[in-house]
Length: 276
Image (tube, rainbow, N blue to C red):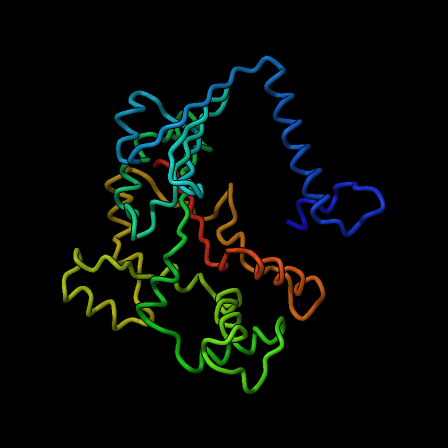
């Protein structure tokens, strides 16, 4: 957020973050209102339904961007003069629809590369890394490394009290902010074990750590749905809530504190797809 609002002029209160945010949001609304007043054609449609019903409900319509990453469970699509955008929730997580059904649902709504080479499907995985860690807990050595990284931001004491003490709860909650989520995401396992054979599971569990993309058959799902994963994201950073500043430094401490006070865990992973 600091980078977004740092150029907002709020007079003499240079450290007024909430004031900067207020001006930033107000400017965004004013810019949007000017676009509406300029004579451009806009239309909004909100649908509260199962996302799997969207292809039938939106039959014949295609979109330049589909965002399967909104915080709300409702589905909506916005019609603009030049760009059509569709939005639904984080249904790509294994505890919801999963990547297979999501790609098959969204791929038929995504505009083809022939008509728009920038047409993009954006998916958000909120639970993938956490599910992976529940399958294969971190070792003592890894936890020691986490604490060493965390000590650059928080004061850790040799005797930190019981596991249920406020201090320990805070430390355990902040641990994810300093962990490497990418290795877990690329090799994460869904909780939905029922559709995996025992042999396939045993093979996956012998890997360190198990591989999500193999178990969920990403390659097969892409082939069936006619989309491909972008090698590099072009709309949203893969890990937008990952700590970026180098610690120890005042900037890194402020970045950590802001994320630590939020409801995020740093494991939010965005993946972008395009039609083949």
